[in-house]
Each structure stands twice: as structure tokens, then as C-alpha cells.
Picture: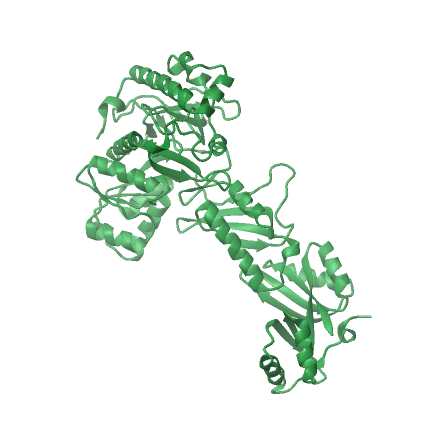
Length: 142
Length: 433
């Protein structure tokens, strides 16, 4: 249930992100989800990619500061109230979340990527409430 | 106006003789009281009796900032601690500051040379002098303060900062003299314009500015906005503080108070003494200082000396504005900063690499400093609060070591240029010389 996410430290410099996406494209690595937390001077890029270990290695070789972090992907219906219901469960169970971001796909579903101190607690709570979770096979390239 | 004609206009022959007597007395004193100097002199095979006059100065060993660091904090003091009445400190090359002590007589002597300096700027007991140098371990505030009191002027000890209040007191008290760093003077000038204060209503006539390098363009600008004549004062903590030298009304260099501070210009590479007029490193021997007399202290400031008699009547040598440094010290907002201080802070923190770049610039006449720091890969957290926490820890550690606040920019590992020889640690965008 735990998904590997790539986190990359990026300085706010023109072309730096394009450089990164170019490297991933050249190495046939697919990006499923993507988010940037930004400050004035730098950003932290977080993404779910097809082959996380390989991607991390390639990016490191190219001088990027990369870290693999573990996250959970929660699948929710892509309609009004879908996110609210899921968040209600999380907050009712007092689970502390570090950050999250979401992407919707064409099949009436959306995926919320969640990073928390205690991922296992997140998984337990969500499964208890019969929420659908993203499986490795759903995102990783074969 | 000449405060002490006897010493300031003394015939050079007589002055050199006086320097010789004072040097001889001082060498004997440090030999007897400072074990470090006794050892240093013995290593060179010098006994106090070998010093007959000023010509023997060149045979003596130099003292460097490193020597002060090695003897931190009180190792070079020539008097027991109960005789010390005050301490001051400035930046050392690493985390430890450079500490100096003063006896009661040292404070008297310092007040005397500052009184002479202020007199050069035309300050008398009729003046109101606003001292906007920082008060504290920094020598600027208290140094000017005591000298101004000695002159008998009315002192406004406002210290640095709080510009609104500075303007208010300039207006309400009718301050006639402003003493601060030149960049702060320029800032006060701009604020005056911004606040739409009518310069005809203020009574400022002179400024005594120093503790950092400044240009003639800056002088012209300050003089224009504040409607004053701006004077350059020079000094360094190790020697006494402000008042080592000062410009007279003819402004043809700063007169060094040579009866107390014996100057030399040397070749910074060989240590050889250079004649008047040649560019080299300025060296001082503060011969009359009791608490911490130093033998041939290397200032690292590069300048020239001129010994022709000045139109003002003074015979004291004049030093030109310093054209640079023979080390990598930066002066930022009047505070001495060494790149090695930044390095020592980063080395102490496991989360960063000691790869850094200091970028100094001047915005609206105020120095700004940014330090770019490479983060250590293994400490890279993908959470903003962690990285921001790290940035604030670096900022706090830098501020406590440097004594000034710097903005910190975290950069990717490996992005700061490495060079094969001496790494480029500083980009100074200010055009100061």
C-alpha cells in the first residue's frame, strides 16, 4: 500500500525544472503525479513516477538532490463531497498529515497522495473505513 | 581648530625622538609583563636595551590578528585585571571575538585623541553632537562619546538605529554634529527627504563618519542631502577604536596621532618597511597604551602615508583613504566580517556543507549580505518546515557569530563553484574604493 515518492530540492532558477523533466523523458520514466511546495528561494518537487529507484539514481547522477519518501495514495470518487468525506475520516481519527496533493483521472476517480509521520496508521484508518488505496501496480511502470 | 598644538604641530625631529622614547619604554614594559612578547623578543634575540630609538622599530617582530586569537582573551594584557576599567571587542577571524582592555589612563588617552579628532571637524563645547554609532562592545559609540565629553560638547547618546527618533532629535534638539557610519548617515539623509523635513530648519553642520570604507561620491551625496561638511575618521579596536587618525578641514588625508600610534607602511608580502608615499600595509605600534600595548600590529589595511606639513599647521603624517585590504575581511554596516567566521558556523552544523558564497551589496545605502549555503544531501528533508527550520538555525548562528543579520539562501549541493586554488567565497557588489 505504501507508494514511493520522489522528492527533489530545486533552486528557483530558470530552466531547472525543465532540465529535470527532460532527463525523465529521455529515460522513459512516466510521471503520474506532481506537486511543488515553494518558498522564495527554492522549491520541493514531489512526484510519483513509474520507476522511482531508477529515477532517483538517474537524477542524482545528474546533480539533483533527491530523496525517496513513502506516501499513501487514497482513491476517492471524483464528485462533489468525495474529498470531504475522506478528510472527515482522517480528522475524526486524529491522524496528523504532513502534506497532501491530488490528481483526478478520466475514470471518475481522483487520487490523493498523503504523507504522514505514521503512514501505517493512515492505512489502517482508511482501510477500516473501506476507502480504496492506490496499489503499486497502479502507478509503477513494468 | 587644534586641540593639542604641542603634540599635533610638533617638529618632526622632536616627534620622532618622542616616539623613540615611548617605544623604548613600551618594549621594556611588555618584555617584563607579557610572557608572549618576552618569548617573541627572545626568539629574535632582542633585549629591551637593544631598542635605542625609533629607528630600531623595524627590528621588532609583527603582531597579527592570529596572535590576538592565540592569546584569547587576556593573554596580551600588560596589566593585571583589576587595573582594567573597560573591555571592547570586535570580530575575530573565527567564532571568537578580538578582545581589548583599557586602563583608566587608556580611556583618558582615547578621549584625548577623539577630542583632537572632533576639533578637526570644528566641534566645540557649543555643539550638540548626536552619537549614532552603536554603543556596546563596538568601540564607535563610547569612543566618540568620551571624546565629545572631553571637548565639552553636549552629547546625545542615541546609539545606532531607530531612524525616526534620530530625525526627531536632530530637529527638536538642534543637533549640530552627527557621528555614525557613512552608510547610516546616507540613510538618515534619505529618510530626512522622505519625511519631507525642511533641511533649512535643521542645524547640522558637520558629520564625523567612519568604521567602514566610503567613497568621495558618497561624501558628496551625504554633504548635499544633510547640508553638512563630512569628515572621515579612522580607527580600529586593536589599536584603540575611532580616533587613530582624522581629517582636518583641508581633507588631504587623515592625520595620524603619531605621538600615541606609531605608523609604518610595509610590503605585505615581505614585511619590509616602505618609504612615505608608497602603497603598502599599514602597521601601528600604540606605544602609550597601558592595558594592551601591541608591537607592530598589522592592520591589513592598504594605504599610503604622506609626511609633508599640512596647510592646517599640523605636522602629523596623513594617511590616504584605505584602498583595500591584504586579507579577506569585509566591513559590513561597520562590522568586521571574515569569511572564515561563516565557515566555522557551517562546520559546526552537521546539516550543511562548508561550501558557501557571501554576496554583499548595497541597497539604499545600506549594506545587505546574503549567504548561500549548500545543504547536505543526507539532511535534505522534503518538508518545507524542516528546511525553513534549518534556514532559521543557520541565520541565528550566523547572527550570533557575526553580530549582524544575514539572509540565508539554501542552494543545491555542488552548485557553488569550486576552484582548484583559493575558493571564491565572496562577491562584493559594492563599489567602495
